[in-house]
Amino acid sequence: VIPPPVIHIESYSEDSISFSLKMTTNIKVSGYVVNIYWTFDSHRQEKRTLVIEGEKSIQKVANLTAHTPYEISAWAKTELGDSPLSFVHVVTSGKRPVSPSLKAKAINQTAVECSWTGPRNVVYGVFYATSFLELYRSPHNSSTSAHNITVLVQRDEQYLFLV
Image (cartoon, rainbow, N blue to C red; front, side):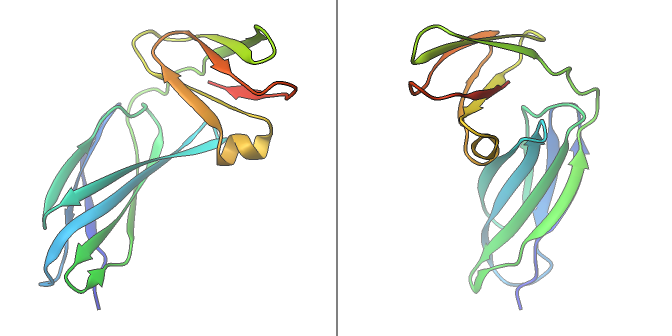
């Protein structure tokens, strides 16, 4: 039986998490697949995937959000097949940024100008869809470090926007 890998949180800060991966077996490991999940504004679950080569690994994931819960899952790729998943949870330190205040204005039938307030020198994600279900499961999205963006939409549709 292949055991799941051990994920150990080495450290975390406002915008990063460092963790180590190892196996408690003599089975040869060729690498790991790691998923980092977090929920954006309770509407949209985000994921970042890392494919890591080698047996032992210490990784640092940066560009995270302060005071946000993250779930890290990992499995090992071995000579006998893939291991089961293991999970850890960690909340980044610091104070979570204030949610931006969004305004969306139709420019014409297929373009919407979105603008918002918020801190400078950060990256904003703009998500939009024609229903709450689509907004949660598979929204259209763009990212920018500016405080406005023009998005192209389908004509004769109503859209929900989230930044």
